[in-house]
Amino acid sequence: MFSQTTEYALRAMSCLALAPDQLVPTTTLAAMTKVPTNYLAKVLQQLAAANMITGRRGVGGGYRLARPADSITLLEIVNTVGTLQRITTCPLGLPNHGPNLCPLHRSMDNAAAAVIKMFDGVTLKNLIDQPNSLNKPLCDARATQDITVHGTLRVRNGVAVG
Image 1: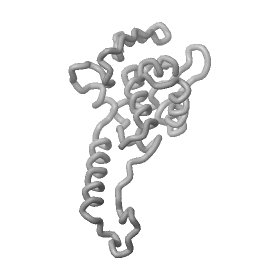
Image 2: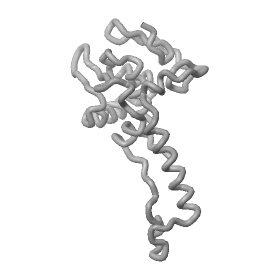
Image 3: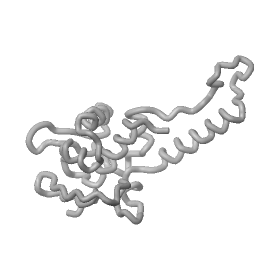
Image 4: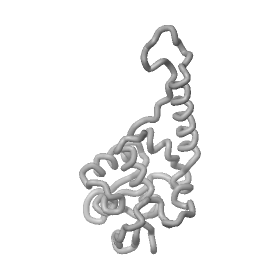
């Protein structure tokens, strides 16, 4: 349902939400999110062009959220790097359908509408604050990263620890 780019953008933004006031280098984000560095750099450029994140080049540089995590919805992130589309006319182009969808395409549109509504109602803050057995927004429970960002932020197993 989602492109790889969308998945990568959601992972990166989730990790940046863990360190709202820190500049996180692309290489650190790539390690945290398990995304190839070059691919992630392109995704981050898209997010920066849309003013979702801000960045600084050079030593001590990196990326951070441009706005508080509670003001960025998952839908905004998805729409920045891709799109979730509703089905409004017959995808087969059958002229006798007009605006009326067959049961299959109506069901598919209903599913798309539900996903859009859900993603529009979940912020990055909601995501990182959700209690779960992994205690982090990403799914790799076996991660063993212990990363220090510019000497102040430590991330252990995908969670900011101080």
